[in-house]
Image (cartoon, rainbow, N blue to C red; front, side):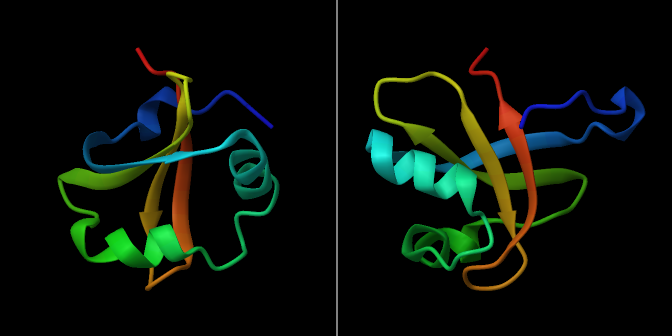
Length: 86
């Protein structure tokens, strides 16, 4: 579900890695973000919170929008945000 956010809580971010998933895999990901995902584990060491959050961008193949992810551990998502692709 896409919901508005508090503009005062926006963070600067950098996309450090991109993952492109097929339609079914992407739908599965956005439906259940609590499940362990190998692609998050593969990139978790590149992501971190700081003055600029380093994020993993997960997208559906052929789409510009997606989900920015900051993992807390190897494959657990701590923060996620909708990315418009703009």
